[in-house]
Length: 414
Ligand SMILES: Cc1cc2nc3c(=O)[nH]c(=O)nc-3n(C[C@H](O)[C@H](O)[C@H](O)COP(=O)(O)OP(=O)(O)OC[C@H]3O[C@@H](n4cnc5c(N)ncnc54)[C@H](O)[C@@H]3O)c2cc1C
Image (tube, rainbow, N blue to C red):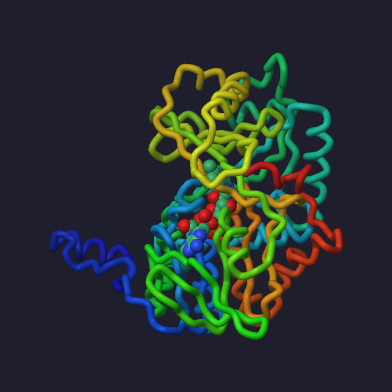
């Protein structure tokens, strides 16, 4: 595979770009692998990548029922931040954010990482207290955030109306090195690097069953036949409960639709990410000029990758008070994903009741930002049986009541 560089681009420009190879290979499945990862979303692919890069484990297959990155990884609104309240969360999300800083160079693939800054608006006294507390917690955790007043908010985002009648802007939790990245590119960059290491990415291959012997998994049944493995990683987000059921255990997960939309493209008018958690809406502007808008989850369980229209209407109506200019914009398209939500709004990165099987899920509405850090920690957990990054995110916390509670802090947003 050719490396991308200014020289390679110049050379290919001279010969009508005929010399680029395929970005990743499309192999036939082998009969067995050392490690199988189910799910070629960002988290599955990042896990495979760090298994190879950090532990030299390359006899790996990543099995995907659709196309890679076609789940939540290709459907999210790409907010990257690490301003979480609890120490284990801040450690995991900050590891991830810091990996994003150099990930394009590491993967030799342009992820369009844009650390443009993210603010979470405080629009009630309760939020003021909450975000000030988070800013103090972040400074102890080594995460750079600050609480800023309404004048600074207006300066950073002039299109905002800070004097709304219901929810005036009282301040914001500001993280200057937060931002966004191109979501598909994250999946594609990891897939290309995995393929380069000789790993197999098996698209259009659905896992339909899991075979076991003496408390351990021996392989998976797929739409392309049985494939054996020594270790199994389940990384299927909204379908985590379905795949866990195939393995014979249950998860404390709810699967719900989460929607987003983009407007018609307009001239650049907003160069920060803004989240308004009281009204449950958030917005940024894509490089193409579209206003990228999202809200909270739909109020029912589903697997349909689409949501109810009234929910979108509610999100936009709530945002119009703070961003009056969006009332004049047309919606270009909208979509939904199925997110896997836990009670404490923190992920599950864990061993399972089956000896050689591990699960990575529960990222809910906010796992895009966590892809590099999650892959790093989960690969370590799968290779060595433990990782400092994942230690507090085990399944046993729900039995012991040892929650990593982000449900009234950073975990309800994106
Ligand atoms: C509308 C929306 C907005 C969001 N906004 C943000 C945001 O701004 N910032 C943020 O950090 N996060 C955001 N998220 C959350 C984020 O997208 C997810 O947490 C993250 O992408 C999850 O990645 P994943 O790799 O775990 O899952 P996915 O990308 O969903 O990958 C799981 C894969 O498993 C495959 N699979 C399932 N079952 C099987 C099977 N039986 N066999 C084989 N393959 C299977 C699926 O096809 C899928 O491709 C948003 C999500 C949505 C839906």
